[in-house]
Length: 395
Image 1 (cartoon, rainbow, N blue to C red):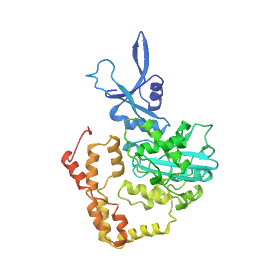
Image 2: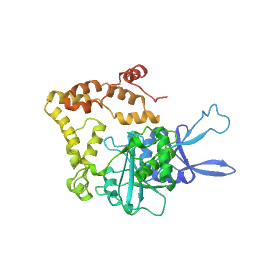
Image 3: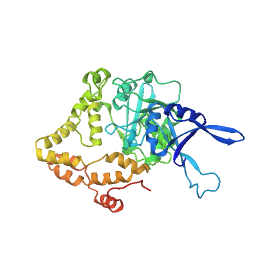
Image 4: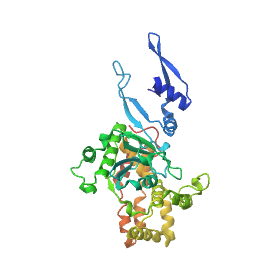
């Protein structure tokens, strides 16, 4: 509290051991003392990262009232629970890798799989045979997977450590979160809609069950943080080529050599992206090769457009070099954790949109140009409200 985040009792003993910090104690009166360990507020990200990597979940409690004006005890409450799949802090994330929270619902040999990256808002779900589940989980490389607390761990999770070094935290939650009716209602309430028809998942009970369980979990863990999830997208695994563990290793897509070096992988050789968003997208494309010929042709048309025009290519590279991680900045705006300098970065990135649109002047690239919408009002608002070289925090 105040300038420190403090832990007490057994939590203090555990924190002192795991973080290698001093364990002290505080008087509780009548000769009683309670174990105490704390970390400075400004160093929270560093200590959070260490706890998460060791498999712990961290509840963050904040003072909700001003000690100077409060009468009696200061109001405090848990504002957020940080888990491997719900990390928001940029310092704890790999810029060019998504951090997915997934959920799995199974019945009669079929499975519903949903996953979300709360830093970008990406939210997807599908249904597939249970036997195909391990491959799909390896592809998305989730940081945390939710399953209902019925019985022991699922068969597919027994001793799981995905080939290529991927692994995830398996979290059991109340099985009622996976009930189709409750999960459906959670989705309807979150998105403020009356039907799931627009998402294309009406009648897909297992996919809805998994997606709804994610929404319920986020509501419990991200208590004070508002999350902006994109509309739920339903996809088919048949749209992509399935690559088993051995194939991924042989192709050295994301790691190579005896030490599974990322620097020697195919991704490292190909990645010349200028933005974190582009890096994440390239990683997704490598991990799920398209089988849809028309969409493949679209991608190749865009590549051809810049490959054949060196001036436009150089100009695009320069413009994209000014673009920060807009997806995650928007996520932090919604959650209330954005810094002023990130808002300046947002303005600078949005300012590049008009010039990028002008470069997409081939008739076959209308689909790509339509995805770039200039937002001059937002740029002006940020420019008028925040100094070019800001310090401090928003609020």
